[in-house]
Image 1 (tube, rainbow, N blue to C red):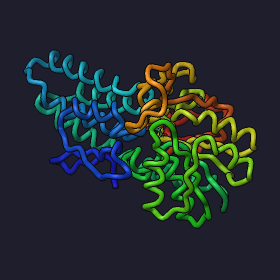
Image 2: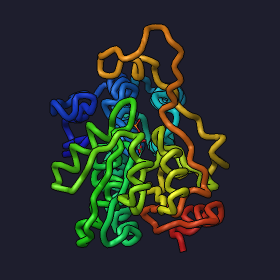
Image 3: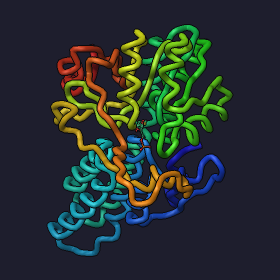
Image 4: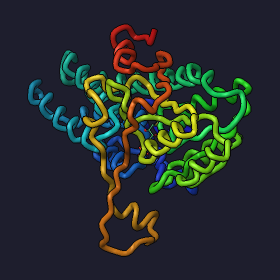
Length: 346
Ligand code: MRU
């Protein structure tokens, strides 16, 4: 099951807001509808958002009707900003949009731009699938031969081109014969862990147990967890990592209990221009997602709510960052830079 499908004619997004009850696709080539799908988390997960955004810009490029080259680029850049603004934390969105804009600027004439951009969007998707597979291969060896692994939010095929990031590490380790039980945090308030991760793990026949977010500490104290693996929405140059709200708490708990805490992400999630976590923009979500989850009121009306979608885990709490180029350890500033300087982590 893939979050995003493109067969050269039809573009489909699996509407993740409907999971696990309904498998419903959004069929569209309207960039506005794709922006809407990103905003309401019908498509979500940093790499998947990046891919959806790339297709959105490619489709938009075919809508611009002008033979004036500079007017064309102006219009395209305006739409690009609109797409980039859909969700501010996951850097993959900006990364893929900037990559497409660069290709558009290199394009020979306006008529060829839509074709060039569609090819590039497809390339981004294919690359992401390969990167995720490699993240799994690179990270599997870090997990114990047996024991429990806690994960947070959804980092599987639904959040990426395919395979996932943190989930790819866990799945690859299990494929290699490791006897692992996954503890999946339900991930308040939108329950990506309960709705999506448990759905994916169950479909794969993986030994998985759902826990409420506030159960993780007890699971660690009881000696049931031997590693934590999460994804990332943006990794700053110094290794500080933004990921789904609750990740930081897990990292603190892991440190307290002497459990390794791993982050798994493609290099497209590393924002080398962002010096540290304080510079990462954190998206705030609508209070209704907390007070009225899935349409059911659980708190009084008109109360004050603070609902950041992400938090930042400081680099010193991260045992290693697993990327497609290899496993990066501290000092992160020096070692993450190597990925961009040499394309490898060694
Ligand atoms: O708000 P979401 O569902 O887009 O948040 C997703 C996460 O935080 C994931 O952990 C992250 O994007 C990594 S996914 C491979």
